[in-house]
Length: 415
Image (cartoon, rainbow, N blue to C red; front, side, top):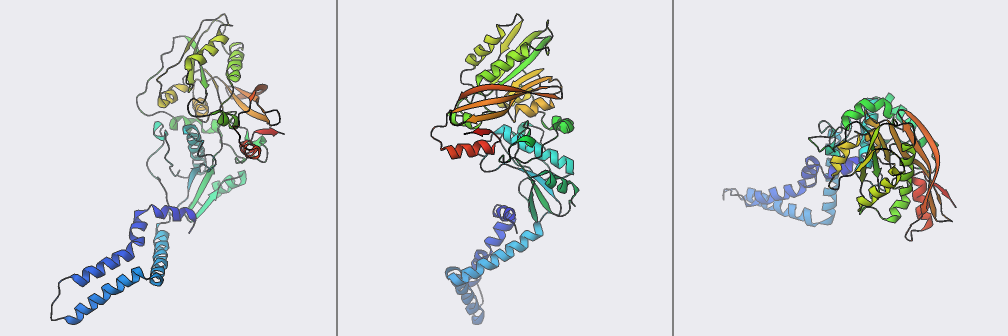
């Protein structure tokens, strides 16, 4: 039996409650039998009951007999587990231990969507993994849910593994695990030290199904927009109370500099993506503690333009409200977010995206730089060289540790 099945058994009442507690139940039954009323004429029966109770007690307190009981118990457990092994294959998403402390709703959502995609490609059911925010979307709660038993666990690490999974006999009781990889990263060009798998989700092919899955559940607040305008969203990830400066340095694409948002907004306003006579409305999605200050920086760019531009944000917005509204915009300037990225990707009205797609670290000069920005117009991606820099803030983290983190995430390290 594999480790997955043993971990499953611990929380499975069908196995844990019966198999592991059974010796104690036998002892209890022996004592109850010894003290039960019986005919005084059947002295032999009374003696047998007493001896049975004494034997049960000795089996519990005597180490050698307890060891025998444990062995028998686990043999019984394995036998029962084998009868519960699922008779068909499934697919599940996995978040590695190194990412779990940093992963929030976005990483969990894109991880689930990656599994949904490969399940859809291979015609496999998806093993549900609950996380905060999963109930915001149209993820199914029927069918496979929670931990199940499988004869084999296969982790998909390379394109060959994916091809093997799609062509495999799906009645062989295999659980295919999809390792985490981000939404909008060109994984094929990452250095060999990057620990993400080398395959990607075809979001264009998956778009109709992804659009269904990422629809928000229930009646939600819709942000009021002025009519007849070109709508721009800025997903300005500041970190707020969630991320310190060290985290911002470890994840430069997820938490880019203010210069990135300002310059990319300026690039959009000066481009031909917006008709010259069109009014513009900008909505700022941000976790900043002072969103007014963020809007002031946005206004500094809009004041350069001789256009009718309005700016808004919602202080009391909930995560679910933001998710429900992100797909309503014509354009978005965003971080390398695994939440706003897929929502933009499935939007039927999104015409323009700008997001950081590569970073490099100069450890000797203590500088971190967003070296590339991807501008997506329709289905065409244009990669632009940039130099958005900021000082490193590693708060005493050893160099070999932070270099390992950066290389894990595919960030170029210069020493």
